[in-house]
Image (tube, rainbow, N blue to C red; front, side, top):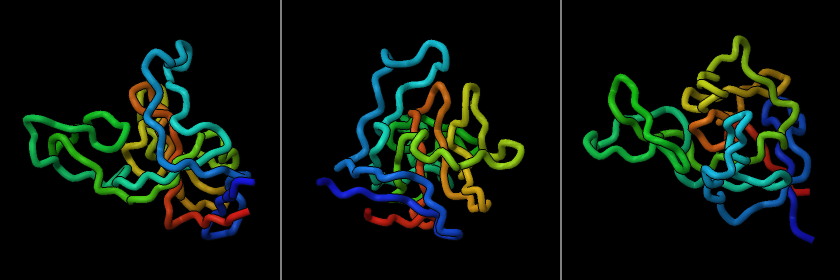
Length: 163
């Protein structure tokens, strides 16, 4: 039987997920042809019931890219992102845990939808936008029409427990 992991809130100990099986790497984002015409959202990068570790920097803060004339995506599976500082790249945490957004049903948006800007859903570029019921801001949902559909758990704010 394959090992499974449950992720807990590091502050209060509440289980945030059920048993999730590890993937060897974060899958590529689904192809544009798989976009849902109603939500304009791609399928989740990580299938339900699984998780993967994003080894590259992901999310804020962002720093200006060295080459502003040939910008690169700001983070894995991302697009170019431009701020007042020009095109930026992620200087965020490494080893975020990427899960299917439905695999953490108790997480809630922050008050007043803080850090949830986007046109069709939260883009995930403005920092954690989901919290445990205890208030611990521990996840970032990317669910806009121009982003991959995935939930990143902050590796410092969650605790993995092998089941």
